Length: 394
Image 1 (cartoon, rainbow, N blue to C red):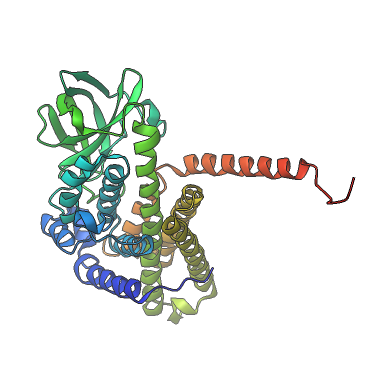
Image 2 (image 1 turned 60 degrees about the horizontal axis):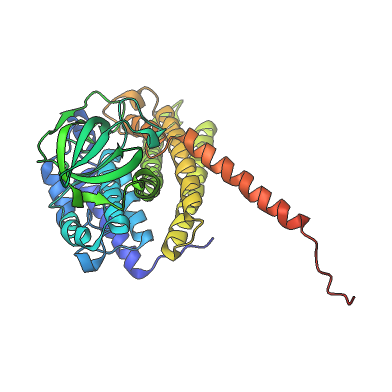
């Protein structure tokens, strides 16, 4: 699959890369230690229009095509997986409203999401509910034109600062997705710290204690919550994460190439040792393979092909496994230095493990991909079993 970027896409990638190298990479380890993403940096990416990349131009966004958004996620992932998670959830909230919101909801929320005036949060996971997300315990009761929400959400990226959340709940046995604002009475958050990775993603627990939400804040309709709104959002999330894994792995490779050229052992640079070359060769090859899967998913997404969903799952699954292996090898190349917070590869390794879990764990992706394989096989066998018309005369 030969991929050739347009002049506009090349220019955008150059801008993304310049921003990451100037404003993110030199400080990402410090943000990680502080377990906080500075408000000024969030404001800067908002001002650049990056947070509204997926919002169509008619609603005030950048209207990025699928490849350009992927390139943005790749570069942000190279600099900081924690910041990537902001782009991921912002995109998931935008996608939820864009696809399942009515026109009033689009006109109201999308322009503010585009400018970064509003930061989005995606509230699906709960203390007792992870991969089996269709069984959320949060309840929503419709009373006198308002929804009353009771429950708790966990591991919400940028939940400490987001001000508009897509919250999933059960209402009379039906899954619902509701737009919930931070200032809703009965809404509160608690920071989560001490994480293995994504330490500056400002994760939070969310508490909904009789939170009162207007009836008009329902996305789609009752029964569409997880299957439709959640499904569309998670597909978008997996797409962003796949590209982010690609960037993370590229960052680990770049660090390893630089280190192996400078560090000397047994009288010569590390890069001249064959076992180090073997590690680097595998890293380069795996990254290239993941890049092709990401580009394939981007091409299908751009054309609106139905196979996009499966190809995105494959890209996310392969890219996250690849990032975990590449970052582990990067630490190995750095030796004891790779275990120190003075080198970024330890952060890449910790963040890569989180990539294998979020937006559908690798095990869930394996189930999805295997089931699809069985379905395709059954269809092929059925076609082969059908009698063929030889075109002869009776």
